Length: 257
Image (cartoon, rainbow, N blue to C red; front, side, top):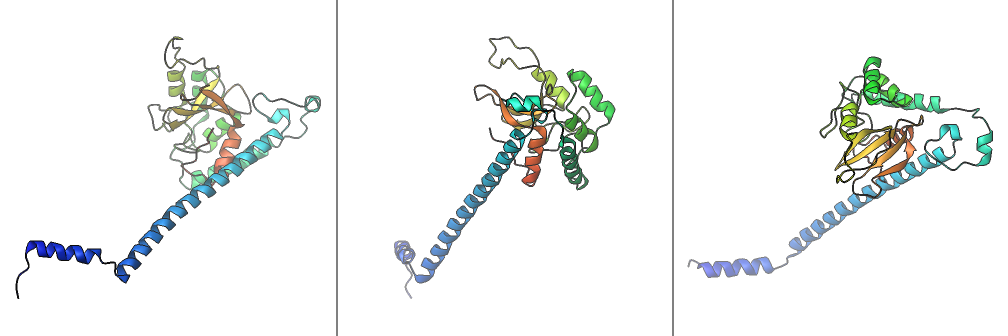
């Protein structure tokens, strides 16, 4: 038996690999089909997630706009009849009870790392900020957990609780940092209204803020890449957390503005 030279071996390998046998064709078909199915399933999961998010968003906005003025937050245009009738029905307490119960159930499952804060810790934070916290946020701090509830890394807690994924430890820390008065010619200068509190670090300099002056606790978004940088999210703290819970409390939930 004569030995083959290197060029002959290379020529033989080239000729063999060029042949498309039925087995090779079947393998290539199944590989292509698996790749197509994987991409299709990924697109389908993203579509259904966006659809559920859109439905939850629309429900939250319609629910808020159907409330009487005593239940709304922010500046809205009201019908004359609303200003003439008293708010005889008020189911906000019941809704907040249900919200607190659902979050407490997640806390019992170990979803949040921090234990509830004491009333003294919350009062010390309010004194440092110079504003009283909304009743719902105060209740969640003292009954559910000292921060960590909500999407992404969760709401920042009062001193002694959960810190953000960035450079700030709690709501007092970030409040002091962001309320430094910058000169008007500074690149990061922005005339921030009083009573705004940073509660959620979304990453990439994006923040969710809460208006402490409004009892309904409306939320605002901060995006340095937009103009204006501060913009209303058109929902309250209760709406925001309820939407998050209705979606199954995902860690990657982010309210897009």
